[in-house]
Length: 101
Image 1 (cartoon, rainbow, N blue to C red):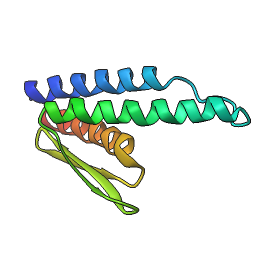
Image 2 (image 1 turned 90 degrees about the horizontal axis):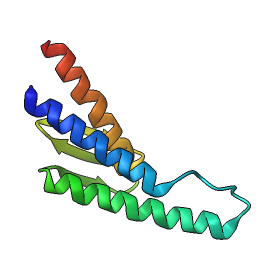
Image 3 (image 1 turned 120 degrees about the vertical axis):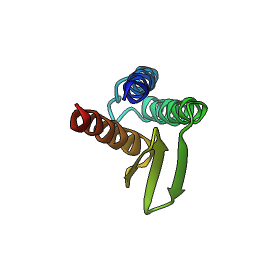
Image 4 (image 1 turned 180 degrees about the vertical axis):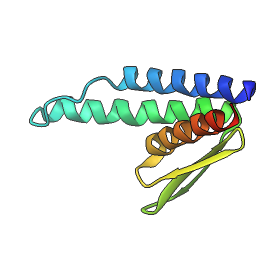
């Protein structure tokens, strides 16, 4: 369980870094700012995936169906891409710890 707690803290840190790198969503009418935001979002998600792969995560993507992550013995999926799958993984990991307490 200690390892899972460390993984949760690591994933939370990486998600925070991703959110900070993306920044707030600009006004949709500012096309240039929105395009730049989308580029930052894509780059930050790629970085999140790289960081999690280094931590032992396995990813699987089925375009237009779902995206999955397996890390620390927990598998989660989402139809909203890597950020949704990672968010769902955090929920599942926290539930696993709460169940084992």
